[in-house]
Amino acid sequence: MSLECKVQVFLNNISEKKAEAIRKALEPDNIDFPKDLLFKIEKSEDSLIFTFEGKENIRTLISTIDEVLEQTQVILKVTS
Image (tube, rainbow, N blue to C red; front, side, top):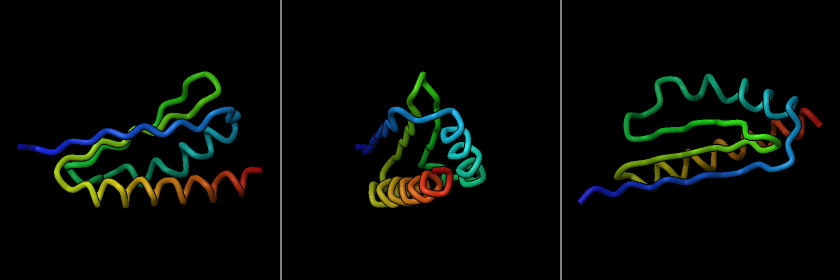
């Protein structure tokens, strides 16, 4: 049996400027991503949606989510 997990994180009430800053800062991290992980960023009205998908190794998925959210927090502080 294969274990798959999908997690979506919504950042609500985010300005276009902050959303673009986050997207630009995180894009380089999304290159050469491990084959069992997927990370996608989408903008929807006043929200930024992070979608994470992982297969088999949930610890790696959790670590990736944690890292992305830490980076996002720093970006939000810098762009305030």
